[in-house]
Image 1 (tube, rainbow, N blue to C red):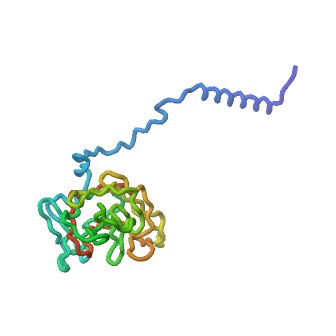
Image 2: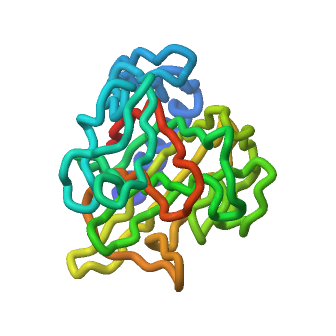
Image 3: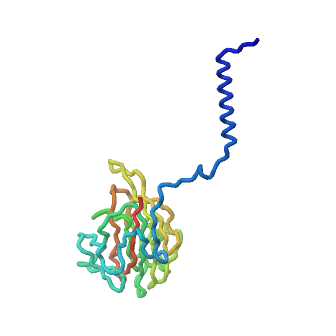
Length: 265
């Protein structure tokens, strides 16, 4: 009678068991439940009417009644723009005017802003209804990160400075501007930059912008702060207010309404 070494018998048994296991796995068909995830359950959010009114989890920054959520960007005194008929209008008064910013600071967010160029606007190029939504106003002396506001209806200017641009950085993918006197809408998703302990850049800022419902900036990677002259660069910050600009041009001041924000994780 032939005898096999115990080591060979054990190896054969192991191979047999492995083959049986593989055969069993092959006969078990995948199930839908294998790839179903049930938790965590997303929070319920009630959408606003017509997709422009604030959803239930939004922070309302301007509801047409007052400037309680805003301060002067210059000295943090109470904002002194004009509020009338549900509209917030820029004040260029040298004493009581100037840019305003939110009392609160934000990091990553979804922002809705409606703005209007006056019907009787004058001037041309950058001197025609110039303003800006600064997506992170990082402090006195810092440029921040500007989404340009300007008349873009037949108004010729450099394309990285037109409405829908990230000023001096990103040319908009389209120009869906309406005529002066009609309300325009920005819907923005802002991903703030992050920094290492030594202040060096860890991850850049990204922005997506819909202009009157049309995608004009698609997850654009910013090169740094907005600069009028020179190349952009990053400067460390954690969270920052949102600023509305009172530009120094001589054209008629523009107006804003229905401003709200949703903080994102």
